[in-house]
Image (cartoon, rainbow, N blue to C red):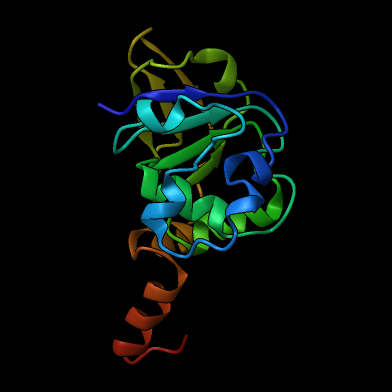
Length: 165
């Protein structure tokens, strides 16, 4: 069962993936430094499928895609936050990582709580507490991109099917 990793407001891309590692290109090497400057224990605690739950303005700072890539490779399957920096939000969708804005979610979870996320129904559930927070589901075109594994895979699928990108 996915577990929550809870953070506050203004989680910057520089603490998600520190710039001093920008010369790394292998996503497995990048994952070793995920959240290193904010939560040094994160890489030892995170398991495949886990979800980050955060406050306002998650992913602010630089526009580096490595912030999303390192989280994905570390095992994070989605980020639920009160709000996102727009470039982080779009980078996540483009790379196939679900991101949803769910005001109140950060207050409804503690690190380690079990999480259920239903993108289509617009609900994130705290299975440890038996509570849930609703959010506006992502529009169908974004869900389609996520279902296809990101923007490049989505466009490839559409082109191979004879459609226009």
